[in-house]
Image (cartoon, rainbow, N blue to C red):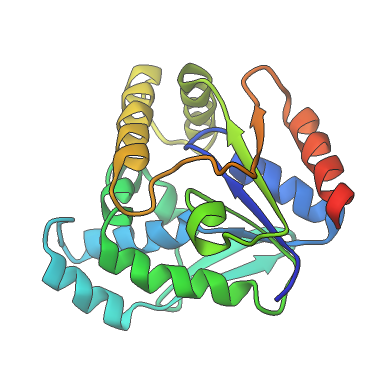
Length: 221
């Protein structure tokens, strides 16, 4: 097993941006596990399968192929051989991914894929249950938090930059709904472990958060 950094936190807390920067500074492989659940959601959406249709979802999971690649410092997501890096970030996927991620059969399929990625590489893996389920024995665990209003502001800004038309109020509502689903679901809920380092990024810049995490990792690496 390689050196494992587990970074968990809610949507919009800055996990994606921070893990990319930390990975670059410390030469770690950056793995966004949320992208994998988004692939499942997208595949089901494309086949008009609802999150309640478990048997149909099982069929999707039997044939799904998800691959994460790093190209020129950016993560490229392949779903069944197709580049879906942009497709998995639409509001349609945003609105349903938490429902698919809460399904036991989905997590049973995706979790082993995530663990396999840490077998031969030094990685920083971000998600919702990395420190609790995927890598409970990670070398270091970080829980990155942020106020719901700031998380919504950041996600709204990202959407505008990507050309995704939405309002701040819509994003705030979606963020709150996702938080409710992710923290209260029965299977692998989002929560901080006792041994995780807690960081509230509400009033911190990306650079400040990055430097703090880098220093914490360097203490144990």
